[in-house]
Image (tube, rainbow, N blue to C red):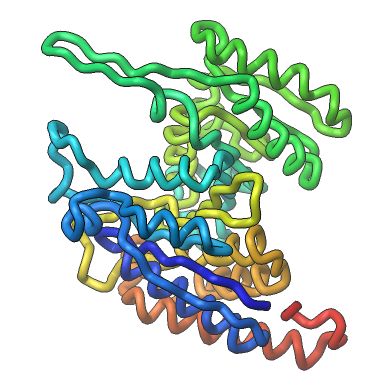
Length: 366
């Protein structure tokens, strides 16, 4: 298979973890006979420094022409002045809108070997397997904004069409999993949430195999900590999703572990670890690359339709999390490159074993 992959390393530890993800994708291509073409472009703070804007037109054009986009992280203290009119995060929001990626998928599970790192007790961790679906291009982040000396406003606006498309994606994903969808809103207070809830109720009739329930966002924040294993697919609007998925990430033990995929109606998606630019450790070579590598697995699965290759990458990461080496956030002392090398070795062993012992028609590489 041939594919064009745009890399946006971004700021802070972004270049370090993106390099690890690219190394894994190149290994998959070499082992399985694919041809992945990589190009690198600027986004975020580094783009502001280079050309004065966080999303250069050339970057957006390259992303629109690609089969998939791999992102590191954006932002940092250098560009964090609240009074600044140009900020790195503006580039990320504009990129999401420009690509039309309205559904952000964030899977959450807890590796058995890492339960000691979770703030929850062991009896709460068994069986956690949640897929968050966050609406990504609407709501308060994209609404009209005003600011005066004494007041400020952020408009939160949703249309039925915006809610329908992300809700249908969530229903379909739930139908392919355990058939349970939880929709999170604040319908007891917010009019946008009332529209959200009524739209979900109407669409539920089209998915009779999926049980759909509603939760208010404040109670959901509590329930994620008290009975997280009760949830399958969780769908919510942009702001609520941003907050809840960061809360959920703490359950896994480290922000460095979790990937994400941002999808629209086309094949091209935007893939990035959920962690930020971590400026406090940038340049030290100690960032955990697991989230970025697992984001590359999601890229293989959702944009390139290479399910077996995606699963092989996930197996390799799981083996390294089990056996080590581990980075500092997981209680170890390994460098980013050492973890990457271990994943590459585990991946090669897994793919070789699959091709050696499996039926050639069912080997790991499609």
